Length: 319
Image (cartoon, rainbow, N blue to C red; front, side):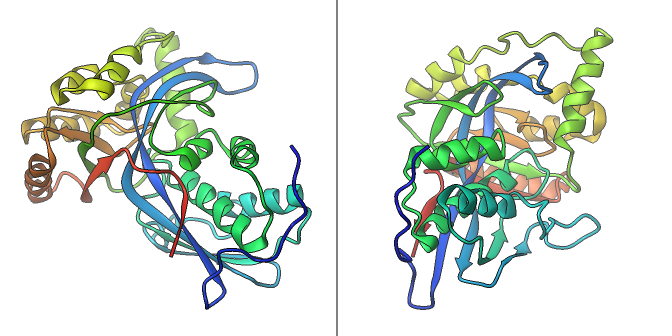
């Protein structure tokens, strides 16, 4: 990785701040292979970036600080505001690679719930890389930022890329995918999160007990990719699949009812997003998504529901 000499602050507004958005993701197909020697599972997944966005605003500061507002800011298990936060790690990594001082006040305004299978923490890290690159004038290329993103976490590169992509390796190796239309979803957000490592460990346990199939390439991404290219929505609905769903349901049995409630309310199909516990329900179109969300909100199965669409771009400067 080569870096240009840092320039002056770029893209700062009159108040000296830089702001970036980054999107949540839904795994519309997720096949999980056996545990690898490096401690990760091999994945084959189709990512879709959706219009639920976190916002990261940075300004010059003494040392590093992170503040969090919005989803996950309070409660018994709040989003951390120290080095455990991927945003903090992103700042330190970018500063180290670019040869600049890791000094910034970073404010994260979260719309994406934490520990929900939507890659909210990864989205925050992606937005932080973009915003801090502009604030510090590090002149990183998109390739530079993507390489740093892969070091931060499996989903961070997709937080940068957005759109639709086929992910392999542990999810960080991306191939962009063409999607010719917008897809409309309702996200049903459960009360409380699920630990991603715990869900993977539960999948391993279920497989060892013969209660879940080995995920060697199944579900196949090909039907999903074909549906994304040409539709119709029912073709995509028939192709959705997630190897982690059985493990998420095992750890959170109420998800079985939530998935059924979404389809009973008119969703073309529903699945657990990533490691859960968010349920992603596919709708025929925008109007159908609004109607579906209204029904689900009234039934009280979820803590909250969100109408979203995708694909949308990855981490971008705003303002």
